[in-house]
Image (cartoon, rainbow, N blue to C red; front, top):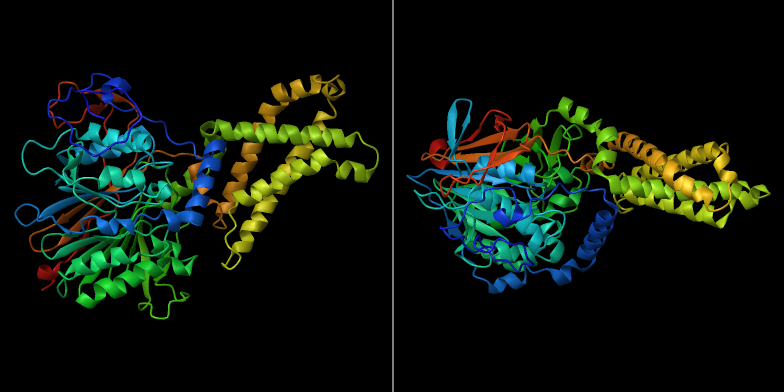
Length: 584
């Protein structure tokens, strides 16, 4: 959508450059902005849960048939160069960004500024912007990308800076980008060489890419479809790119997911990354010094003798806690079934954001935020509990213990509750370790909800309403009983999530249900002329939630300014890695 035609409409979009004479918006009106700012995704909304679950199931079952990576073999397969200026280069990295407007735009706004002052030092804007996956939530489609990612980033940097080359954007797809088989992703990021998203130009033609950086540093970004495998055309592409590697070159490897963390529970998760390093990169004698990913919505760094393993998924999506992270990792895990796996090494958790105490404190917000953020989910629980109570009350009026226990409506509602809670616990495949805890916790949660329904039925039978003529009891139950039991059921759910999270079950749901927008993060990286790579992990303790239009600003200045100060804070001290020249 261009600024001459700002009215929202169904889109088959492309990453076309915005005209330099574009009108700047004077308000937050979507007609002025050219997109509709979105509220954060309500991850426990019943229809969203059903829709996302079905799409995930379809992607898993039919992903091989929808996999467009094989078809990308017909697209141009060149690698890229980013020489920087004067032999040095600044880069930005952000991931998991296309959620609610306030959080997404807070990060985009800060990255788009000419520089950020951190601890008395000015860090210039990245000449390259790397997006690490999940550029849109919850589902990939044209309107979703336009409203949740492209629009906010265009508003942050409407045009390329007046001086110097325009910054370049490269994007790697995550699992949410994959839900439509990469159709919308490829249209936005890889459709044409001269495409633009605001002031950032897009160059890539595939969902994966290789970039030669200054001072013998390289960037490789691999596309794993749901951690399945790396396709042959992609391997051929990287074999050609790796032909330019020299012994002792340094490599930053971007992946869609931090499989080094996930391999602690699923040893096979890291196999594809390990295979890629062993067969494509290692033969050249180059060194993979940094593994970089998003997907988990926090910042965490594991450090070892040979490389840094960094997760930075704080670009805009809900915050995920860090207090459950393992303190040390063995990568590749010794339990992997790959016979030719690389030598296992130990990596220690040296930094995380938010800190452990803050993460634990935030987890207790579930009691308040889950019902407030997810009214549809609370309503669904209220309906289920009301119907269960009426079924129990009806069964209580029957003679005989067996007639009461085996009432068809009562059995149906109990099956619904127990099946729902077990599925909510997401039990993994029986072949995986620790799968029993998911079943046990899911069943315990289900029986706790049944117990709450029984307590509600006991109270209901002691009130005069149940003796009224029909439909009086149903009306009173819907008006009075339903809202109260809905609130109590969400509190029981919050208690379950807190307990289950201590056993590494439903940790994601504990935080997704709260939709915490603060504590965002991104990386600013610098390659010096001597090859030294410095990584600055930057956190945003509190995002901005009120914006002021900037109609008189320069063409490349942000359309919207924060109404209150918006700043970054260093998550940890800069991470300094020597390049080949500096090491020599």
